[in-house]
Each structure stands twice: as C-alpha cells, then as structure tokens.
Image 1 (cartoon, rainbow, N blue to C red):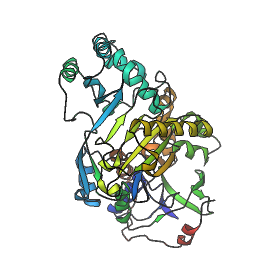
Image 2 (tube, rainbow, N blue to C red):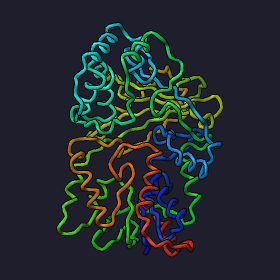
Image 3 (tube, rainbow, N blue to C red):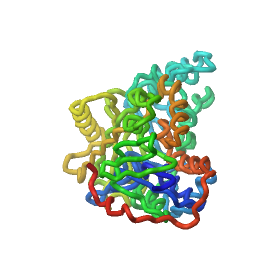
Image 4 (tube, rainbow, N blue to C red):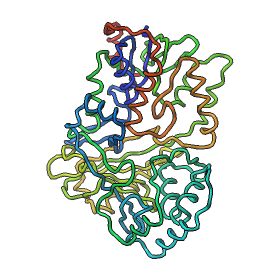
Length: 453
C-alpha cells in the first residue's frame, strides 16, 4: 500500500510525483495505462519522422515554471521560436490573430468587421461564447472567423458554449489595431499567449516527458489500466488484476471515465454526472513528405467549412530533427462529437485529399502517413459544466480523491498549466508526514510485464 496513489503519468501526474519527491515524500506509486508515459504529450517515430499527438508547444510565462523546465530538461536543449501562424480564408493568408490582421481580405469582409466592431453590443457579462464575441469583437469578426472556427474545433454549437474558457487564449483588439492591421503588413507576430514558444531540439515533445520521468527516484508502473476506483474502501483495481490501496488518490484520468468506473458510497450519485461531461474527439493525421520546402509556416487555421480540418501544422519548422534530410512534415486536425466511425473515416479521407490538393502534394511524395486518434480532446464548456463541475470536484476531494489536470479538472489548459497543476496538488497536501527514505518497492514489478486486459 502507498499513502498516495497517482493515476496517469502525463505531465500533471509526473509533476505531482516530482514535487512529492522534491519535498522528501516517497510513499507514493504512479500508475500509467500505456506502455509509455506522457498521455497526449507523446511522440511516435516512423521511417525517420517524429510526430506528436497534435502540436505540443511549450509556452512559458511563469518564472517558477521556467526555472523548473531548465532544471529538469535544460532550456539549452530546446529551440526558442517566434511564432509564424496564419489564417487561410477567402483564398487569402492573413497573420494570426485575425482580429488585428485583415489586410488582403475582400473589401466587403473588412467593412463588415469594422462596422460590426463599432456597433458591437454593450454586454458586460456575456454568458455564451456567441454573446462574448458579439460584445468584444462584433458580428463581422464572428461571422468570418470566430463562429465558424470554434464550431469546427469544438464540434459544438457556439451558442451553447460558455465564454469562461477564453481568458488569455483570445487576444483583444481595438479600432486602432484593426485599422493599422489593414494598412500595414506585419512581419512579426508578437500578440497572443503563444507568440513565442520552446520546442525540443530532438526527440519530439516526448523529450520533456522523458526528462521528468528520468528525474524520479520511484518507478512509473506502466500498462496499468484502471478498471475500478473503490472510494468506499480506498482501493484502485486495475485490468491486469492488481489492486492498490491508498490513503489519498491523485487522479489525472478523464473525469468522465473516473466517474463511470467508480464505486461510490450508496448515498452518492456522482456516476450520473459522467454522461453530462462533454468532450469532443480529434483525429490527428500526419504526413511525412519527401520535399524540403513544403511550407515555412508553423501552423495555419482554417475557419471555412469547405475544409474539414481546423488546423494544419508543420513540425519540421519546430525542429529539423523531426524529419530526415530533404524532407518536410505536416499534421492536420479534425474534430468530431457523437459521430460514427464510418463518418469519421470518410471525413479523414476527405481531409487528407484536401490537404494534398491545397499544398500540391503528390502521392509519390508521401513517405509515411500516420493517423492518431484522440478520444478525449477539447472539453466542452457548456452551462452544465459551469453549474455542477466545482461541486463535483469538491465532493471528490472530500473523499480524498483529487481529480486534477486538464481532463481531471475538465478544462482547457496548456502544458505549463498541466505541470503547475501537479505542483499545486502537492502543495495542497503538505500536511502529509514526509517519508525521507526513498520508497522503491519492486514487489509488483512483474505485473508491469503483463498486457492490459
């Protein structure tokens, strides 16, 4: 038995383990369902190409986080990159963010955006994303970018989305900025939380995960898929037959899955909430191309419905080590919610064909095609989540179950936030008596060789 059990060796789980050890606490065990740590922060290799599970770029604006990354992974092992991102609409490339870069778009579109911005509604407390856009950007910007793009990325109606997720993710604008963006072509893109990022020189984003895992004294137990969490008896049951008692549980698994697989007190009805927690899925298709000059951009947003994908990125521009010499790489993302596998497969075929056509990629240039499926992608911020999620997490915490991280707390978050979430939960649980002798119990080590049931 470990005093603390951690479920999930993604960034938040690894960070929790790391910060426990930094405080001299080793009476914990960290379990991961996959054979590799990282969760969605993982990389795969094929034929000399490295692909991440969609674009994972490290944005740093916190001093502690910066020092932590430098200590654990060494910032000298990362490229420091200034963003080159664009929007493609109405057959025109405009720099991101759209709301300050209208130059080159049709005159009628520019006029609609300016008129809508000037006439925007005076709503100081918009509840829905739709009303939030009308209040801060106006109907023109909504029509030509925000509404169609968010519809694609969330696969959910924008009038049912709340606005609480926007925060630092959507840059504001002003009439002066709008006019300046029409009159002058901007070469540098310094606006927005992701204007600058770090990316590993080699190994893909898995490099960061590997550094955190290698810094731990205690092992990570892989191939341990949670089958049931018994909060009454405080035991986690795994599909490989292992059962792990705990005093305190830190879980980063998707909250809906936790609730579905939880044996709760007879007086509790939290399982009913599982189906109310909405989250879309994403298909991430990756192409390795035998051509060095595919694009000089980092990524492109596609708001228009004629393209099934919402974003295309070019990993070879994050690091040249991700591709063989003379090659390029590309990733695309399309989102869906409550769609059949047949429908998704058809959309994927359409998306790959549209991508090849758009970038003039010949079939014989495609060295590798790798498709990655992400069942839990973007959390849906709807009215139910706003009303019931805080109490749901509080009820779990009262049972000594701390659901944390992007999917544990059912939120939209960056890699920085995921790692800081791991630190925060450890800081919260400081009342534990520290175990100063490293705890490395190999009694269940043979179980890690078993396959998931």
